[in-house]
Image 1 (cartoon, helix red, strand yellow):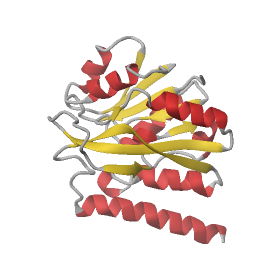
Image 2: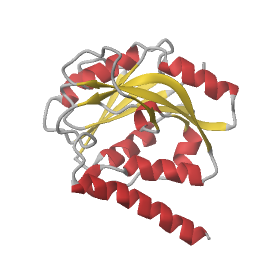
Image 3: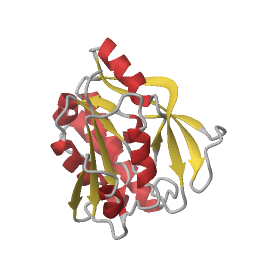
Image 4: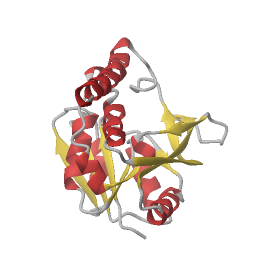
Length: 221
């Protein structure tokens, strides 16, 4: 199958980064490279990643946000396909095999996404969590040339919404995105995470992404 790179931005992820990487290593079709960007963590994230093997490329940078961490990972990719993963989420073993097959059979599709099922941090996944369509980094498998054409991600106020804005730019570029109806990843729900606690600051991030999209449409009209 097509070689692919995995990109994982991480910040203070010592409690779950090993689980995320283990789920990549357990894929029925393994990656050509795993790139983890430690975005200025103040815990043992970098040490845990480094201890998991020399095959994992660890990039360290000062804390700039998940968008900038993703940009650093994108710049380091050496394959024609990119798969994203948030550091607190988990892939199911057949995820990449399923999505790569779709992309190989359908060259008109620029990126493939899937559904996720929630599980709570500290509890095993029992299959009963909420299932949702996930147009997110964790389920994304995208052709590298398309990802690079979209330009860099921008970190909005509140630290949430950078991926929403970026994937909107991919769509606006006329690229076809496809979402599979299968659950291919698990989304960890944990107190204190940006997406778990929707504060006013995080809502501003989503508004930032929506506003940028509107402005782009006005400019191109």
